[in-house]
Image (cartoon, rainbow, N blue to C red; front, side):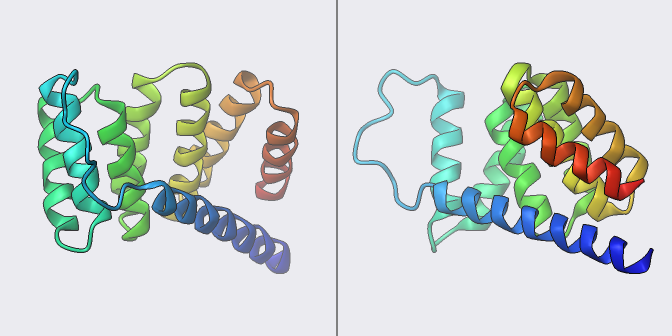
Length: 160
């Protein structure tokens, strides 16, 4: 039993690592050359914060900006999602759980399935197997992606 738990734990950690690498690689690294024309102030602030996070000069400035945006606009799924990802990256798993729960509540469809997967990872890393399994069960009920469903079912079986 101990070795199967280790394999599950290793598998989930690898999955989280790959997800985090993808998020880091997709993060903007420099300020865009184009203006913020056509964006509302909230959208422009999120883009600016993400650029700070991706640059070497001010990741904490970007995080503080995203925190402020989510205080003013808790429904801003981009800001909430990036902060949830950052919470996992920094080992703040309980905070990540709360942020992914907010993201699940604010999204629908494919975005909600992705938020549930993030919630399951954060809950697992926080040691809350029940919440992890609940999120995975919700993914099973919502998703139509057969590869994702197979992977989720395998994780559920390993965790039980």
